[in-house]
Image (tube, rainbow, N blue to C red; front, side, top):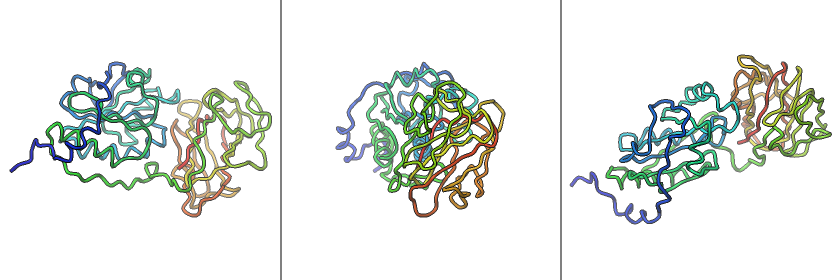
Length: 338
């Protein structure tokens, strides 16, 4: 006998574990759509929907992306629709051209609502990147998850909601081997937190005299930094979201403990390029270099995005990261680790 349209007994048992959390909010506040005509909550009735809140420089979302991409591919013909909602964290992420480039470069193929005014974010009452909301075919939110992890649980929820809607699914889950920025963090050795560089949210800033907001200032970096402290050296203007280098050879130093170190940064002037060189404990990074520089530590900031600067292949311990910008005009927004 065919099982098409029948819900397995184990899913009946689990249904009570997925309470109705509310109706799927409207996407009407979108400032534009990519990969799709505009979608509506009413138009998605009959489909199981996963709403994925993201912003393209978020390392946590980048590590989640291969799972969401795989679910969209695996279950599309069984009634699943993944809707990405791009809500910007930094001002440059509001620019439609930057989001279009990120969608292309990061292989985001699902419909994407650009939420530059935070209208959809507010409609959902969301507070996190990444955030996943799971809606059933009747347009009711039945589950949510904030941050990375719980991928098997999330896929099981998708399977349950599809089965409730009459679709046949297996109980197998996707297996992901993330590469590059999509590789899972080395959680066992990760002891450095995300650190914002602009004065609105920065912490652990170690340059003597502290932050001088909104005006050019000559900063110095201490010779010895404690773990998870960072400093500027050279002439910088500390702005709300990012310090901006005013002269060549501006430096940033960070004492960290993690396999990976990334920076969110970009040229202050559109279509410009800022060369840099990275040292690790005073030497070129060699095999520990990230994807955006060579073994000698040389690279260039050419667009506003997240740059992978360090990926250590061996033993992880406290290290001193140093980046020198050989040209003026860079903005450094945040450090993230993995």
